[in-house]
Image (cartoon, rainbow, N blue to C red; front, side, top):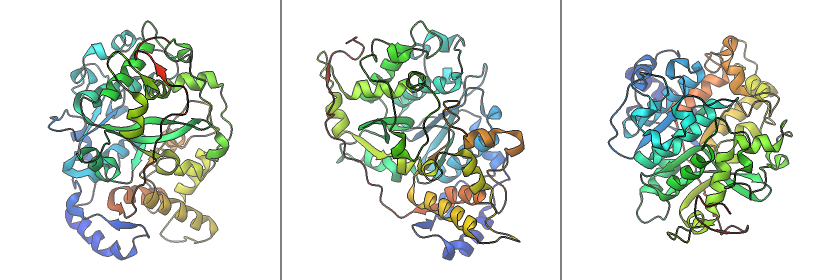
Length: 416
């Protein structure tokens, strides 16, 4: 567990002390806007169910429950609560029998496949695929924002997207980040998805993904499913991402990210039975931002090397014997740009073997499980900034045009 949060008095002292040393592009958040409970108090609160009183919900999931989360992931969720304060309610759900935060208390079993309900899902990616099944029904039923637990949050949700979603003069209904999953073909990531409850696109997206799971216990071969087989395999243009080649077959990669392919099917589909128009919706009602800037800046700057990221963040920023050499400056630039110019930082564990190293895997190790928060390191500064700094920049969305690929004319669950 991370050290206890500072008292309101200490926070006010820090606010007065460091406000003149805030990096360009940032400003200090008034401590009165923060949740100033200790980490232990917030952790205890996270493990309890909370009333759903509005659409301003943050949804997250860890299959084995909060106590089984790696410490760095626990700190992520604690920091969401602290930064967002009382305006947003963070719900961390699980699938632990008897748990008061079990997803079964929130979503009926009919939204899930038999393998999920009977705990017979298998294969190497049960956790990520369980989360894939959970996220969209929660947004559909209750509204809010899904955030993967491996995510650092550098900007208030209201300022990322929610003000625009709530503004009746804006056409936006769904918000998220997009990235090229094939050359020239953008796809929305599902690690950050925002929408108000009852959204038609969100429900259809889940319906497609749920159909893939009928009668199976894992995602093997999803790319060949009748609802997806018309789509080419995912094949990211890694050269554009400053990323090495992925060490896996694109068939397995496409199966792992089949939820992305379900999104692609839906955004290109016009359903004559009810008039749903995916291309029109994608073009006019989605508030989408570039993922390479807003969530993967960290990876791009380090050639997607978890080892390099670990080295930068483990380095000492302040304290005795700190030498401000080129290595120090590289870490300083890295962290301050992340805090000022990206809205999130998403760390993942996979797909396993796709890259030589993942920072999430390193921080998971027992020997490194506190390295994301060691005093005077760049990692600790990154954590501090994620709670105490606001960005001054304006986020600029991507204007999505009508898809250039072939449009499907068929039912959402109709084989084509």
